[in-house]
Length: 119
Length: 489
Image 1 (spheres, rainbow over the protein chains, first blue to last red):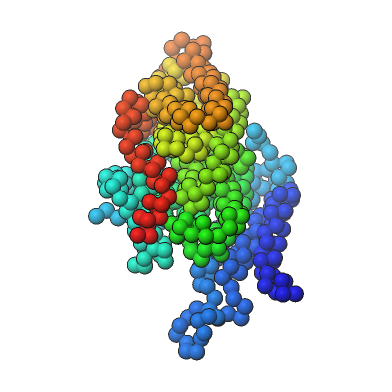
Image 2 (cartoon, rainbow over the protein chains, first blue to last red):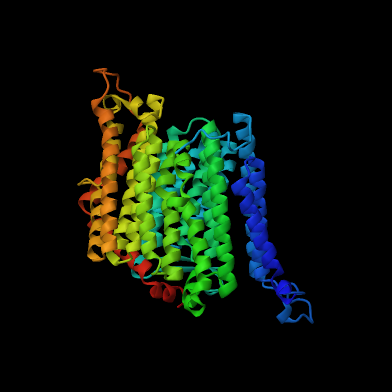
């Protein structure tokens, strides 16, 4: 159980990443592919957070007395994740708006049927 | 002292000010990008002499490296920012008349953001910052590919977006792994400590970073989005996507491989990938009937050649690779700009529709021809010294494997010559009508094309003009210890 306890976040994060990649590679529906992108993003964010996380850690703020600096979590990955979440939202919003326009033009969201551009 | 932060801050601020300007005066939007890039060009040129002696390191927020986000304006960064500002300036002048339909102020804002992102990527010294600027570049180019608002545009944009988003996620995982290993995001600090952990644990983040950045750089198995995106975008955007965006992606790959990881063991593999990219690109370009798709595939081929030259990793090789990169940026931007108005007048992207254009639009066709000859590598244009340098670098290594690869690269050049000469033949020697009426591109398009032609010819005749900068840029890429020392002191 010790293994599970110390690596559970990494297992979860890479599980989400693999699920997201699987959806992107296999599904034909554009909305599902975009959901896959969202899951992939979530996995990456969880991974970044768990890099700097300490079990039962506290926020890295020095203003309150009696906080042990050993127990503070690393603030840098959290700052990274905030940025990454914002970027992820922008990409997903753009993808969904493109999906709407694509549906207006083709009348379908099936990626197998949207293939006018070929090599 | 000129501060390199201005190169990023001024265009970024102007980009977000464009909607405000457009509130008061609708046409103001299109004059902002030329101003911003003229400013960037002047600042970069002022920085250049100083940077050639010592890299300028800017720490943001008053902290010392490695604790702050820093900008490293070395010879490589300033060389790239000059190319970005120059191509950006000329293409934005071209766009003054070319962009007529659609939401013009959004176009100009996204265009400015795209090139700001590119400038940020080449100047930053922090790996997460590199990711952020990369995303600025990518997201604005997804939106710009869809700007034409037709079926092909949306389809290409969504393809580009899905592949690009997966690539960025892989890049971010790589950054996270590096942070977990070293506890720092500063590229010089990571590079300094890279030998302190076992090679196998560095290998995974390296592969993730190369794959993630390779999507944007269009290295062979990752480039399925490129022909669609570059051919569906408006021609002015194709010019910067081909001339700037993929080069910046390639810069990031090279920076990661050379400076951060110092990985000499995968260089032969990268050289092989480069030649594969080259052959795939040129062979696909050969079989195209659509002129913009042909140019897009030819960009893949050129990227392959540049990657091959950089992966030789001798000082000749890297100089040749950077020279080839400059030559591709100028020539391909010129080709797309010229093709843009030829397509506009002909009303079709098919090569056969361009018959007789040589008489209809003689100046535009002359510019296209010069761009094509330069890309093939004919003297006296810039493509000749750059390709010559690459071949010489490969022969100077005395390695049989590289000899074979450069032979294949020359084969690719022959294919390239075949399809470009075919287009030139259609332009001048096909078509029945003896005296069609002349209808040139407008003056705002002819001036940028003329400047590109002048640069291509002048640098082609006097390569010495740029070789000093290229040499010091190559030595910055090859001497990672100097880079580490100059950043960390």
